[in-house]
Length: 543
Ligand SMILES: Nc1ncnc2c1ncn2[C@@H]1O[C@H](COP(=O)(O)OP(=O)(O)OP(=O)(O)O)[C@@H](O)[C@H]1O
Ligand SMILES: CCCCCCCCCCCCC/C=C/[C@@H](O)[C@H](CO)NC(C)=O
Ligand SMILES: [Ca+2]
Image (cartoon, rainbow, N blue to C red; front, side, top):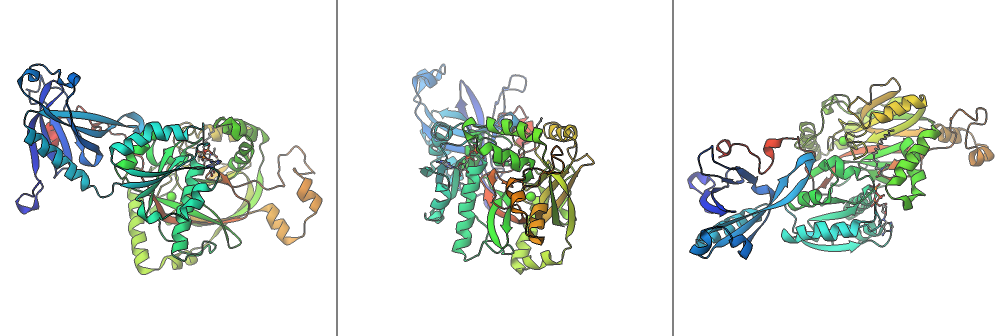
């Protein structure tokens, strides 16, 4: 379409057939919308609809088949020309589906004009991927990854003319190692089909590759890491799928595929985890010691149970009621980042994350990133803890729909550090139950939560190890406190659960890297029925 005087974008308005009736169809480039309304008087009019151009998946010329031609008197009059618009239809609970509308008319030229105008507009959507590298874990979750990709995702990618190179992994770390070898720069994104562990693998491959190519030493805990601009798309096919759920609002392969197709972009904070100047891992969701570490360690031996392993190990770990002694030192995040208890949820276009983005851009310009950290004071907490959880995002998942920290932000450059101190089994159960309902899970005297930009943890055991050479027998065989065998005081360390993977060290140093990577997602959208395509909203307000 040609530009109007003054650079204004044009509107294409035609009377086109859809189903059995004639509709007034408008392609409004200025507003970025395709809309169709029933031109009959209001009392007789049917549904009025609009679709943002950014949510059109594909446009195709369509051959009218016999069934479609059964549209009353038109059939006898003339040859019909048609085109089909495939678009995102938003359903309840953040679920997206692919819907289609076939418009027809007798004028071939008009039909071509419409098809061409729509295709040109789709070409202009520059954030959409054209070529993707896909890794499928065939053994994640209920072992359905390959089937989910082939049946639900590949047909949508093909409809949207996205070409793919697909790797079905043959062993753990296959995807990560492969990302150090392939020419990643020819891809617009990497897709992982699997759970949080598979995502973690792909993320380590991509971030690691970026640092290697830029000559950054990942073992330096203070290094300013290079941002990774190649987006990752997650097709959920794991056991928890927490990262997908927390960034999209639902664990649904079709919804995720559609977010990839429309080229959504959600920056994400990443924590680096080090021990003694050695890089251990990155984390984007949960870094958990005590309860969640023990669940993971136990559940790894029961992978054959599938997702049920977490329920089994969760129950067992709850009954064991172990707590761990240690010291945490942290640097608080600035107040402008809000607070974990302010009930300001991170939603699409989040103001707090936008502020952090601006601040990051300024810092990158000035190269002043390192100075700020050294000047802040460290706060120190010693104690006996049932759980220490550091979360970079809410960690919402189907088991806990609002997550471990409902007001945590995806891209604010901070993590929420949750300390659950020694308490009774009953109180701990009350705390866990609040993960599943609307009550405030931080409203307990034994739970503290802080918004932090970095922290360190040392277990009592490693402190003792450092100060005196320990009794080897106590270290190897002393599972529990010998003086009080029934007190649940644990003299062995717990394990860190890092996005569903275990860490080898209990003493760790953690730093949040603001918006280090990007996902094909847009964060969780506010539930707004009016926004849904095919809504009953008055078209007069829209045009
Ligand atoms: N072909 C493979 N064989 C064995 N393990 C694999 C293979 N491909 C990937 N993995 C590993 O499997 C682990 C778990 O995979 P994934 O995260 O997909 O499923 P999950 O653990 O069931 O789900 P979740 O992480 O959501 O709880 C990952 O750490 C990944 O490194
Ligand atoms: C009696 C009520 C019990 C309620 C228990 C609620 C449990 C909520 C679980 C939330 C876990 C969210 C953190 C996600 C962690 C993932 O990284 C990891 C790997 O997928 N999953 C687990 C379970 O560790
Ligand atoms: Ca964050």
